[in-house]
Image (cartoon, rainbow, N blue to C red; front, top):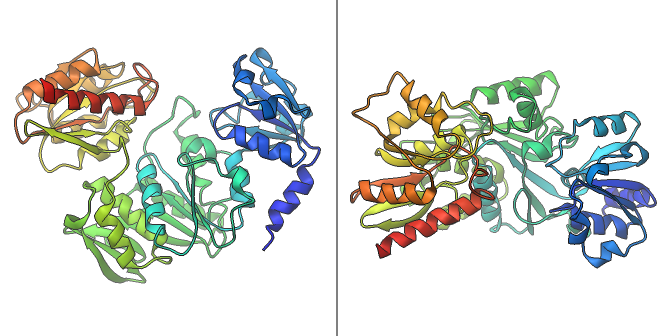
Length: 471
């Protein structure tokens, strides 16, 4: 069956001038795809050398020109479309001016959502979105549909539109950067949670929250919006849907309350609920990944797939799914001490979710680069869950202050250590720990003061843990 929306787009885009902002990641295959449609491309990038990274198919194409370095954002008002990479803020003056002149602002992911012929499941949130997205994709491997995974994970999918069929399913992890200018929403949308994050990018917390709403605010009546019932911001989302007459079906997930429609867990069991009728899905003892935050992710994922696959297929997946690298990832047990890598925890909110995942006090390694976040609320959580806190990086003083200023602080119950490197942190953790202890690296901070990204930080942590066996 022909994808009419895509066919119309191809006809419309021919000979149109498109400014592609950012020559990396998903924009490279997008450039090639748009060129195949007959579009005229202007490549914009602040990096003077960005052109050298392009392959010959793009460099030799007569329909490609360049605005690099200081000219990167010039003459945007002279094109028909702007294709923005998520890392470039949509509210910079040059883009705002172009939009005022009638230029259409879009992105690779927005075009995918607008033009895909099949069901789309979208996941956003401040924490848990990668695990939830991956879980959904794993669940759906038991369906009869071909599954495509994209957005922040997987591969760029815009240039795969000719291959994507009506009966396929697309699963997307979506960041606030990608959602900011979205005017279409996925058919099934999940907001895992909302914590303070990315305030080095967004103007304020209000703008960050507003960006997240685009994942559900443009849904149709038969679509599904999924929220965390225990979260106050989720309640405001539901109110906003009512105000804007968004009538998609609402499902909730929870760890504290039963729900009318959705999924929740209590007393060590996960339940699926439809119109108040609950069915037990699985005991948490039988789930491969552990921790309350993962049980919430599982409940959210069940809400998304329970109309598509059977409970039996959900159970089979949960018994063998071991989680996602760098997300409260079990590394190894060395001399009786268990080590966990939670390098993805780049905010206080993400770290707080990790701290609730263990039934005993842990040795915590925290700290990293500063994204201008508030660490005040982290203090109580650390004190309640941690017996030794090892601090490093640019945020160590903020985290230390949050602990010392807490009304719960008692120097006899929590020990504080400060170090200059992750190597030193792991070494100290190994020296002060004893058999039966748990060591968790959950930085509550970004990684850019010492590492290229959280993945590099997580891999070093794992290597350091493995090297302890030889000492």
